[in-house]
Image 1 (tube, rainbow, N blue to C red):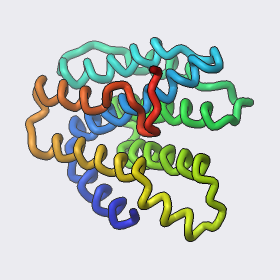
Image 2 (cartoon, rainbow, N blue to C red):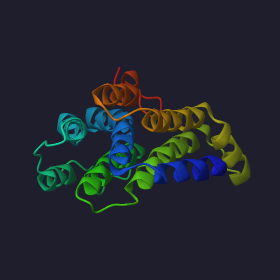
Image 3 (cartoon, rainbow, N blue to C red):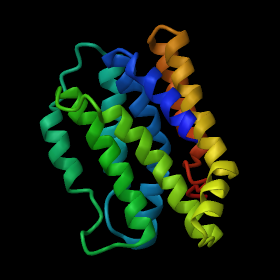
Image 4 (cartoon, rainbow, N blue to C red):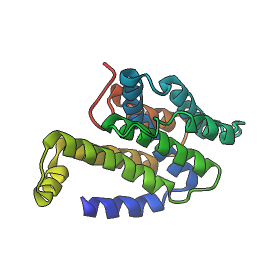
Amino acid sequence: MFQFDRALDARLDRLNPRQRLAFMAALCERLWPNYALYVQTTGHGDASALRSILSLLWESLAVKRARIDFERQAEKLAQLEPPAKDDSFGARRALEAVTALAAALDTLRGEAPEAIHEVSLASRGGVRAFIELTEGEEDETRLTALVQEHPLMADERNFQWAVLETLEENSLDGDTLKALRQLGRNEGVSNLGLSLD
């Protein structure tokens, strides 16, 4: 996995600012069901409000002169975080979705040159946490090996590579953006293999 991290990070660094934003948008799209499930099970948050902000992110990529107040969107997004006192697994995964989208908004405001790495790592970290929770392995060496070989982590790596390769091999036109958004939506299944259905 560490070799994967280094190789991915090096290629992410070579993306231009618009490509970086598209990469983050695709990952945010895939994190959205985790947030929506948290809202569905706890009643905290607003999945449609998070979806609206994510849609504005895609709009900013599709319409170069889109006039969107991202300061205001960042304020709205901050209101969507799970309650600070909720330290449940679901709350932490919901918070990942919010902070990933916040990092993308920070990038739009020119404030987060490392945001692409943070979003990539957050998505992988959520998968690792889910594997640790579901597998119950306590030996650190065995757990590390289990995480590296787990189908969910393989799927996460494949997903991030697929987004990256789509960005590297295509101009960032309307068709490519649609393909990336579709890839991120993953038929409603999140990076944890969860869906609202």
